[in-house]
Image (cartoon, rainbow, N blue to C red):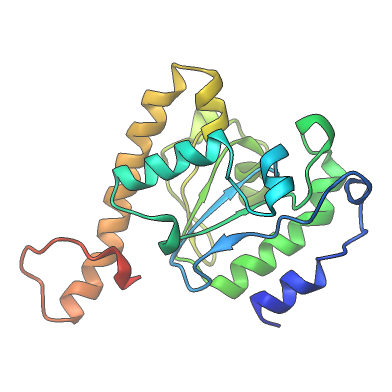
Length: 203
């Protein structure tokens, strides 16, 4: 199955109660061959209307943060744990997470990212498969079976809590270091082991 096939298979998904209140399934967007993937919680109002993740205020902040470390949205892939908007932007219910989790894992398997940035508690707990608060693990990489996980505060949380924004910016600088470390082997293989600007589009 390709990423496009998976997307099409979920277009009319009816596997949980969220199907009745959504405008459309918000599958994901970005580079299907990206080495860096960002995973959020669930679509909000704007995402539900447009069918694209992170297009509201939190999406604007995410774009700004990406650009601050030399990345663009066209170089990464963005998805959410939950593919349909919960009513009133409430937290996803445990059974909704369990229903949608296999689809996220399939996305990861198909994209094969080297680095997955989980934004917020739900994405981090879903991918770590354990209950842990984002305040304890943000900015710390975890080596999982198929990729490195890098938890981040959710941009929406940073918009609502001013004290989180500096920490989120700091964690993005740590992300830059991880990305540069990922790029280094590519540069060396290309015979450019001397100091050169990191070419993010190599991966």
